[in-house]
Image (cartoon, rainbow, N blue to C red; front, side):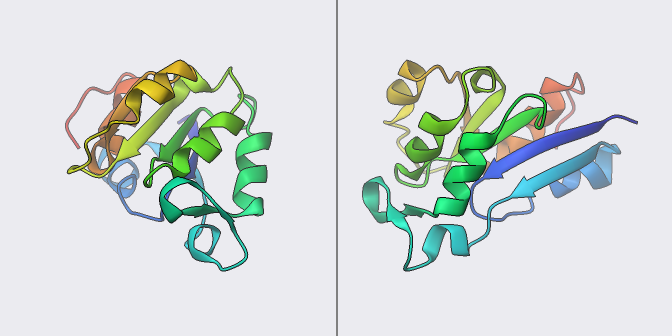
Length: 138
């Protein structure tokens, strides 16, 4: 079984757990922590959310040899910090996630940066399955 390597630049959540547990897809997830978003020593993003230097370095160093897919949480504009740092080769394999109630008004700005995949957070597992050819509902 192939291991799917995913970089998650979003708040820790279990949305991808079902992909592994229920569909037998082996995921190797690199995840930023709550401290990477909420620590007092962080750089402010748009809207007051933050991105730690560690998380920014992780985004900056992400390469297709290291990750199959990337998931970025918009987080009131915090995602733009990460999106600008992701290499162009990974942008077509990156999902920008929003809260279900979000207006998603930032989507055109992400598109200008070369991103084309957008969904609610709870849909990220389904998106991974679609990317690897398993079009089943999560």
